[in-house]
Length: 519
Image 1: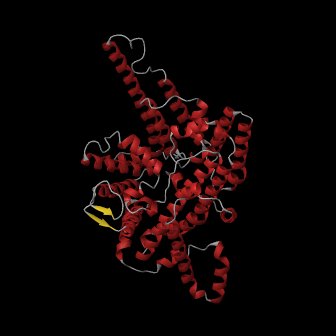
Image 2 (image 1 turned 180 degrees about the vertical axis):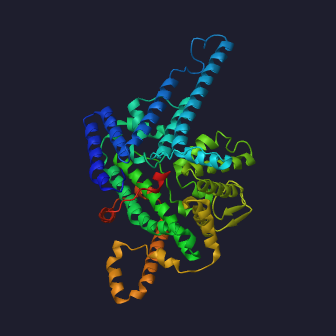
Image 3 (image 1 turned 120 degrees about the vertical axis):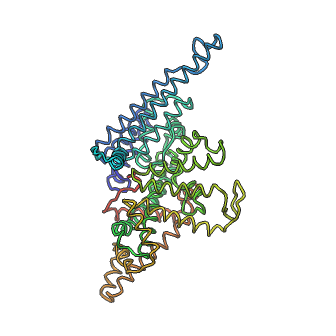
């Protein structure tokens, strides 16, 4: 089920909100969680009921492993704890061994499920290519959100094995994993920031202020997706399908269109998820903090998909040694993190290349050769550039990296680089701009076709330029999450939200999925 669909807005969301608050009002707190988890599973199964078995098996296996960990005594406890030091050390060694075994089981379980559904065909395809074998591909259907709920549960199991968290009630655990606003495309939430909120009975009461801010955030996110991301997708999809016939100017337009499509799609989803959380009086972590305002790639990754970066830092970067084992090791660890991030996004060499490019750029930033003037740096840079120049470099380099991210193959990405630096002009830009045949400009288009049909190409070009100008203006604004948290919902903003909601509902006849559903 999509957030930007009629069944979600007019049926699912009202039902789940009414049921949640009605059950909590009657102090049926456990039943309310069961109801919310059940509705969340319906939300998930609506895409494909076969996905339901995957998430149920994943949750069941992880919960069973967590339960088995409760049978392992704590270090320094047990019948030998007060005995000889040698006996106590042996007992503690056995406890550590069992916990390591549990950790290994958790890693194999979760990464095994993720590998089978997401990477099996990619792995076999490359084995066949490298060794001239003929293993059969399975063409496995990728379950939605598997990368997100797998990492979510993996973080829980790792912390359980390390003794950082307790074993929870089954209903609490299932509610934590399946909470539908973050189930499909994040943020990647942690047990310690979600389960305590569900246990807090004060959050079970309807909060008008939180609910109003939730609607505000949800509608802003919906507008980003329906009115902006889907519009830019018209140009991006057409352009990437015409990779080998683009000229330099049209290549620039197409990659900018995809850059803004990706931004407003993911930013829109993040806002909608946070808004839905607030409707339930639940705070989801910020996942998207105006990344296109960043003046360095390092800052960019402190703003884009924040919870994914947090996961890799906590569970991969720090265990690898982080920055504790010297500068060279720190740079290698950083590069490894971005390689894994690229592979996390998809089973293709294009994603690996994209991750490698991001890793090299962050490593460059960490070398401290170039700094941003007026910004605090841990180490003084050899030279400083103004913030506006840093923004140009950051934005341009991220655009270039998306050649890999969006292309179907490395050959396609190479062709886009070739197009960009060819310096040619074939007029392809008019075809790209003509994709913007929007219902909102129907009257203007019809009038111009009658009065001056020869100007239609320039008309679409002007629409494209105005759309780009609007996008550049919007990315310069603070994150909607921050504005909703600190700004008052004035009557003007309320009217604007109402107008945007109606506009989105009218425009949702051609529903499209979110880009991060593919990851």
